[in-house]
Amino acid sequence: MRTVVIGESLVDLVWRAGAATIRPLPGGSPANVAIGLRRLGRPVTLVTCWSDDPPGALVGERLAAAGIDVERVPGASGRTTVALAYVDDATGAATYEFLAVWDPVRVPVADDAVLLHTGSLAAVVRPGAARVLAACREVRGRPGRAVAVDLNVRPAVLPDRAAYRTAVERIARVADVVKASDEDLAWLWPGRGPSESARALLARGPRLVVLTRGAAGATGFLPDAEVSVPAPRVRVADTIGAGDAFQSALLDGLWTGDAVRVPAAPDELERVLARAVRAGALATTRPGADPPTRAELDAGLTGP
Image 1 (cartoon, rainbow, N blue to C red):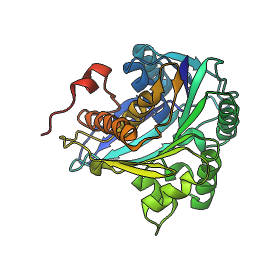
Image 2 (cartoon, rainbow, N blue to C red):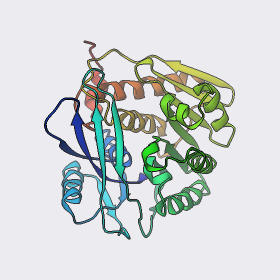
Image 3 (cartoon, helix red, strand yellow):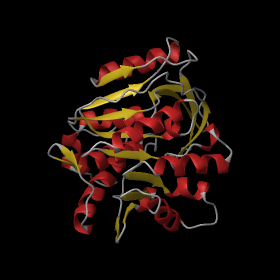
């Protein structure tokens, strides 16, 4: 039994404020989540696409080195997505611009998949987003299966706020677990508090919505409960891949034996969220998308 992760693999061109050079780092939110699950010892298959161009070579090398099972599907355009990540030296926060491509000709899901994870560009960039949505519907219709989505909103790939909201609401309807940051929800629904937006998403069909708040921790929303956990204090190198490391640990925490189960009790959800927050914090202590191993996560964190 395994997790299938569907989504983009790309190269981040990391430009630090005041720096004279740009550093290419292969990443992509779904690819980062797949690698994070692999480091936590979970069987995972990444369904993705990239081209035989220089950025694609970096993607291929990284995924090969990670040791994960990859199903590389053809892309219609023959291009690899590239993101320009601007990193603020003072805070480590990254903002993005994209040369975005997400056009897989198919998105297969293995029969032994108990969990499908997707999100980010894959959920909103056409034409691939429609194929991802169909895969989510298929998996959620299987008994004992679950679908998880990380919104990971990137306005640069779809500046039309109304169109982005429509895409998010559409995929939330076919998800069991939805994760979003406070920044994601503030952009999607300006003028509305992130908790209110999270509750609105929950009403569309998921069994759990998780709201991340950066250094302030995270909150999980169940139909009849709300659970918040703080984040540990760490010295931040940058925030690239932190949300993906959080998501990997969250999905790992939902596994019970050969099934995926959404916690029904607040104390159980609190344990899952606390571990995910530790994973995200640990990822910020090193540059680029570098999620922790199970041993590192079990060892915990030491603050600055």
